[in-house]
Image 1 (cartoon, one colour):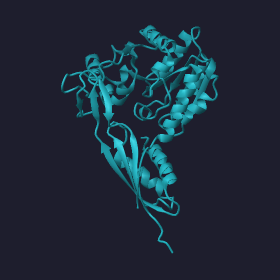
Image 2 (image 1 turned 60 degrees about the vertical axis):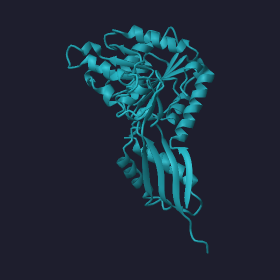
Image 3 (image 1 turned 90 degrees about the horizontal axis):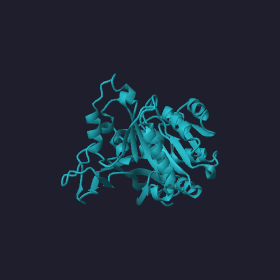
Image 4 (image 1 turned 90 degrees about the vertical axis):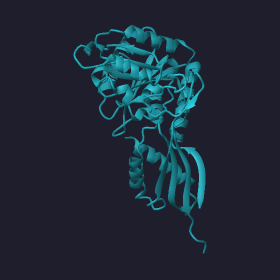
Length: 223
Length: 118
């Protein structure tokens, strides 16, 4: 007997993501989902971001890793509301894990929720978490070919960051190729060159975050 | 490498749809070509998962890959890009894609066997 159906296989994840989205909207909290490879500098970028913006907005962070609470410990030095999710062998965060993280936060008091996804440029792309916007982080030592090899993050991100610009003189990296590969996928995505370590370029990123938080969250929400 | 979590979600979905006392012989799914999923790994994950569940044990997973289809937001032309890493519109040259098809994983159908009526 044939049974025909048309159901999204990630239906449950997507339903929970929509619940997260409406909770965030009701609380007036913007939410960014930060995705980047292991070692691309996600946590240091967040430390600098939390430290720079702590007097201007209230931020909570949900950080995902397979093991350890090291990132949460680092981030907690700059932020009162940090939730560490350990995924075991899971290569991404899903909407339910984020929901559990959100339950530990006073969402109504937060202007911004940052989700630091598991270090990985593949699996996290497929899982909607309820975020307002996805942020893709590349870094110079990873090589100039990463946008072409990971086109989906380019396709879906609201902004792309290239971190570790301070290492550009020391490693082979063809900036023209890096930029041309991104522009062959998305001509309109903003690209920011930064160094979380030296602080170069971070003002542009901080301003982008401030604009995100200052805008009407409902207008920016992904559907 | 998240084939196992997708296969787990699929199995839960299938079990919810499976009529009482029926056994599953085949599941049909569509996978968009923009998804980071390998068909072989999906079938491997499925086979490993269903092994311990009598009602679904030995069932086949049939996968149809759905081609990516893009609408150019600059000129409106619809096209199928040859590769995901170049979305350039063949008509106007812009990289301003709206994805019309090629994303998502969709359960399309099941084939089940009902026990013969006594």
